[in-house]
Image 1 (spheres, rainbow, N blue to C red):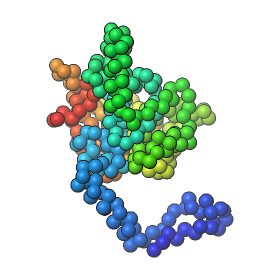
Image 2 (cartoon, one colour):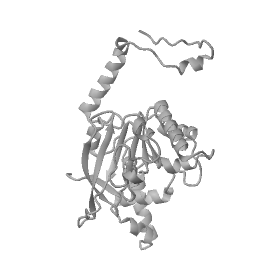
Image 3 (cartoon, rainbow, N blue to C red):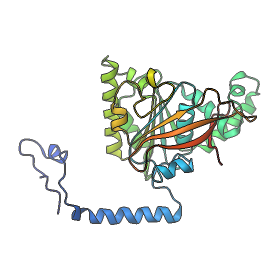
Image 4 (cartoon, helix red, strand yellow):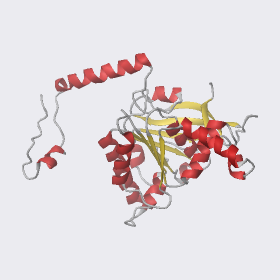
Length: 303
């Protein structure tokens, strides 16, 4: 059965009619089902991801093999590694990735990528102890390791949703998938030029991100701040400011570090990633990770 929405609006234009919901009987979806099943099987048998991945095998498996289109909320307390986690995911993406930063400059993020790629302590890249030529050689190595990562520095200016969507589409080009990261949605919403209240700005920002995800069919990792009551323990409702985080998110991921947990000799500290919500699998899963802050690197604890 074809879609029953008319090309002509009863009281508007054809473009308005195109924005109305489609009515579909299940049988009319069989062709689309077959196409999707064939693509899924091919990806499974060839080991090719069907979209952007986190490059943490256990997490990718729990999320259905790849990050599904939609908004994926990531929250944690201060200093647990939210930016390091999201930046690692973006840098390792096998598809183009746009990292919108409203908190750290592009150069600072570049240093963090360089620390992870070259196993050079982040502090050494800042201190000046490295000869400029040696420092630049490390940076070149990091840039070569993440050729599809683009950083949008929104620390000094507002990045409107329309600009984000147009830029993301330009970067995607002919690639089959794209990853967008917003770090953080709270800082990005602060630049909202209308000067509206934080709650309203966050809701508007989340709605805009969901619209972008639907329009260009891409996953968006949105870093969120935690509210004070949930600062320690996290939870599905831990994101500060709006219930739209947990209700509208494709997944909600939280990072937690035991305050008494000490790092090992290599500097790796245990961190637990909890899948608080998961539309593409079972929620409530805990994944044990190790985070090295000096190297800005996450890895699974059992690997």
